[in-house]
Length: 485
Ligand code: AMP
Ligand code: MG
Image (cartoon, rainbow, N blue to C red; front, top):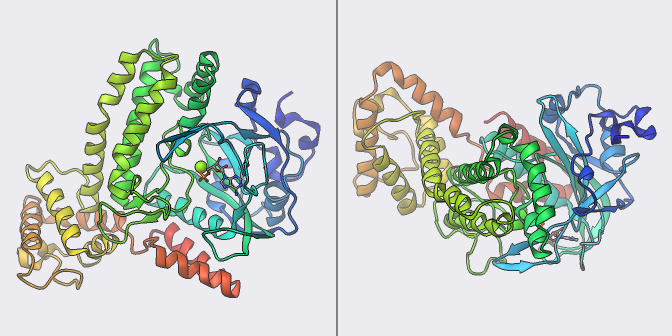
């Protein structure tokens, strides 16, 4: 009997309980998880429902009630088993064998309308065997921040998990990094998978190549379907994972995102971005920007992200060696650098208005752009938004017209880098026909929204919630993000 056929679910009127659940991970046997029970909360106030995700689940947001969200994702009624997933991981370079879902569980896996299998994973749903000294809870601010990060990244084109719901749960929590007591929440994260690099690292730790192979076969079958029938599927899987991670980190870098905690337990085996704690979008271009207050040495600073991801991929080879040939792993990783740079370049050129730029000076344009952003410390997001806002076909006529209607640029003649940037940008525009200027303006507008999820904006949204229980600015911000304003 599958989960969806359990008697309780069959007659349920709650649309979330009758989705196409598949016990995909559960069917692998209990080596990978522990069955847990959810915490009971004193209160359930639905603060966020992601209506944009409902059609993908075959649901109509008009017919799904707030109460449906609450009974499913706040009270966890009628759904079993709830699985705390087992994993280990390298945290700031140190191996930690005491990890695992300490405040979450896999609520279920759903086959969506697009044919893909999605995880519903919780965050803040109570203690598990992996909670160590923790309370198993998520602060409301933590929930607010993860909802915002996931939506912002998604609408900027980053392959990311999303939050399906966030419910305030009425507890008082104590945290060292928030004024306490602080409010609590429980969140549902919809992602491709919660299988992490660290899930494999744990199997290696316990010297279980049999379980590694079983899990790897499952991962390929579910998340690398195209490779499943290939003779050398294992080698191809790793090469594809490397490509996906290279692409992901290029996306983070281009949109100016610093994940902050790139431990191997926060790296998804599907190459999707997830788990947003102390992240930040960079205010200005600063390679050494550190997002997490506890990242004392800047291990996960903005510019380290590509090399850290590469290192994490390299460390993943250790457990994968149980199944995949060493030479194949090394060959797979060899393309990381090139894949990353190609993707980063393409994305940055898009931010500069060019969907495909086969220009001999494209690299130089990129180099000058970064040099200017670093020298001037003008707002990273603001600079690109100003390009979009003030773009004019006149820029094609004269270098002096480039960005001349924007006040983010240095005074005339004060920055040689900026002057050279203007000359080159103008020159590249000149290689296009005048009728292409509209397309460039459109690309600039699409790639560079005005709204950037900078920390002061998140803090002001949070202040309104914390001080006046005013959620309007949170919803307004989400609305601006979703409409790419
Ligand atoms: P994170 O920093 O959110 O990726 O979490 C790292 C590890 O700490 C994971 O095993 C979490 O489940 C666990 N963890 C974080 N916060 C808590 C908490 N409040 N209670 C229990 N476990 C937690
Ligand atoms: Mg985590």
